[in-house]
Length: 436
Image (tube, rainbow, N blue to C red):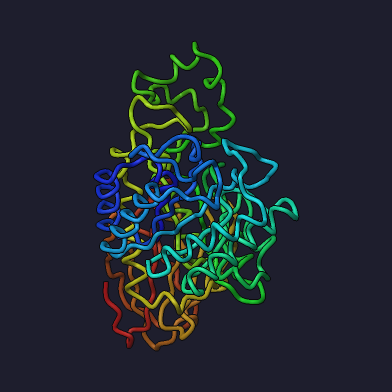
């Protein structure tokens, strides 16, 4: 259960970092994604303590003072039982067609040196390495930079940590890197387009690849981010428009300007459960203000509804604990995506239903994004008696429905229906004596 804190090392001081990490640990998050060489001019704008990460913009010359701050955050995360999903660099520091603040500082030669430095420094810490940084592998030079950086990480940490790759939306690391021996698991990004994105197609694509590797959504639609925010960019270069959109703290005051609306906790839940019931090995949450650690009055990157501190307790973040609770009540490792458990037509729109069944047929989980009735093929659960539950993803409450025979078809009608009335059906082999 990941959170997205790309600017954590760059924007927050130590007191703020502790506040953030304690908040995430309390909510049930397990992994924090953060970038060492940050996206928002991370090479030329000092961190919160006034230090730059590199001397003379040289990856072979890391600044010890900067990394002492990174050490502090990593150590605090470890104390709280959190892993850091550490990106050595955002992708704009590597040659790419997208560009960014940069500057480009990596070559195939120095990438391995920087990777080895990080690997050695954090070899005994709870780290998951994430290469890529929102960029695709779009040239041979880029490929060799990432490959050499991975080799450097392995040389430094002795292969103790997993390595993955965070691509640009809407892509998966599997497209370029699935057969690379250094890539331990895939990441895909479905980005910030619209509600009911077909994230299950990305998950199932990677799930069915050979050789088998786990896969996870690394960047879904963030809570409180504008849908297709990049299509409403007039404010960036027009001071008069800016005044109509933002208040004196640089927070959005005119939400109607972003005509497609903003993603909510409902969208977080829909994409999370669709991902997890389609073969993903976890889920990564994001909040628009938290990833950029936006502070009132500071420069706007992507327009925010609240600042980073107010956003820590937004509904979607609070509901992560309910996702974790559900999948820790049953053996998550047994789950196998199985759409054949659903009887009848299943449309790929807002009425789409996802289902997964335990490999030993001891339980089944189905998610209805709009509380729609679902008909289950009951023989999918071994029996002879099946216990049924409704699980409410908004508050984590479970209510027993009753017992049913393990034959034929059974239609279940959720307690409520419509948008923001999503429900989860859980069926158990009665003999397994599962509880909530």
